[in-house]
Image (cartoon, rainbow, N blue to C red; front, side, top):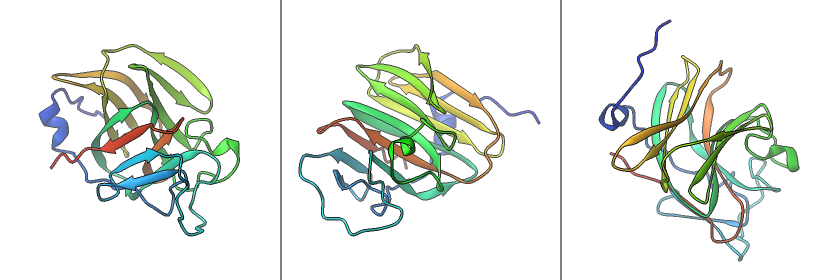
Length: 187
């Protein structure tokens, strides 16, 4: 099956999807704002109710929406952030639930204006222009996941070709207090 390689940002924006973060998955050290599109790791623990979907070990959160077709979104980040996709059945507790340290998630580590791709605890150094904005393109059926550095232009950072066996969810992981990320409104 041949898949068209998209080139311009305008073409990607045709597939932009509105993604919000699910408060029921947010670690209690994460503060959600801007209609659940922005998240920050904070020193003040949040009083979220107990929920089976909540991450209890790592500072991470999943989207409310599942991603099954073609989808494009952008994340503005500061600090050390992993921009991820994961299956819903990823573990919620213990150290092995960290995004991309298992076979249920894939992520791009963004830190010091450099990038590293992770999956199943294997890391791949990625070269590309420095940018505080990352674009993510998913073609679920074709098994394509691509990460882009977004500035005036878009530069492919890393592309995965695999078989996705379940719907995916967008995810964010934070290293330390003050780290922030926002899902940018593209429509």
